[in-house]
Length: 381
Image 1 (cartoon, rainbow, N blue to C red):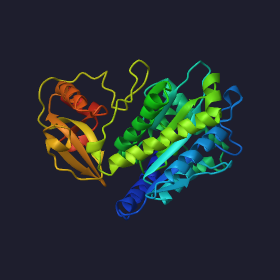
Image 2: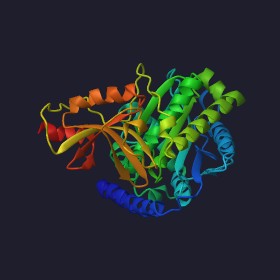
Image 3: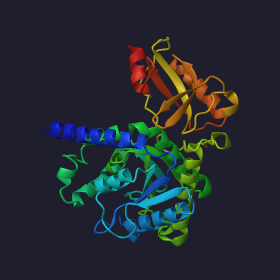
Image 4: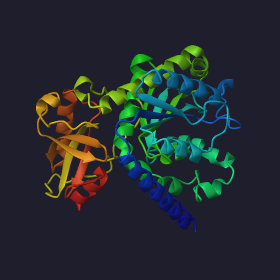
């Protein structure tokens, strides 16, 4: 019975996703760039109260200031899921973004933990790589229990069940690359500009991200339970710092998406000394075959843009053997092509040397994109 409810939930979301995505493909290309800003919690849902600080209030103040910065750009339209202290159901937050035909969805939160954990982390939708990520998502998803008719609205979804959470990935798969790009830029701003502790870009099953059909991220601006960090986030300076950094990251993301890839390259967003994930398929437990398999090809994705560029070396910092693929309204650019997975490590190093520090390996089977883990399994059989 539980499985049937999960399947019903997936079917409903798949139908909504297809319908919304179809509408997005036909939207006016000349429209403003629409950013939906989501302040977590609100109203009778205060969020966490670490060290006496109130998450719902801090998140709202940061979001409103992000919106104020972005609104100065005449080509950007800002939409808020809430602009005051009110409670908004998670599924309605996604509906607001979808109805607005948004280009981005950014949800802002503050973290909490019983330890001395501190620092920023930005999530994209995905499966949990460890128990910590599951607990973060479970805490944010538990808000649905405060909603009226949550069983009806979420078709039996149980935020405490890993099985249920695994079912919510369909709607964001098309936008994962772009979500990673934005999350990377946000973390880079927090780390390089503000010198905040970098906990990295991670994946987890957040309902609020799953409800949207556009690139979406959830930003944990810091831990209110870490007294020093909580006081910083509760201060005007801290809120100004965080909001300015988020806004700057969104503006840089738009700059890249507009096709100005020659003017800007990603910097490495991962602090390799901390326990973080790089939002690339986990392959540590796989044992790839070193032999060639002609129907499996690995490439290194170096960028994505709405602008179609000639695959010439001068457009890609001197890299040759560039191919491109159109996916929806985006063009994805790949470096190299090999049937030997081990060779992709060399390709990645070469791409990084040319400035593409956020590059990652992708796989194709008979010309169709598949997960790297699936490709490795196919090659080992």
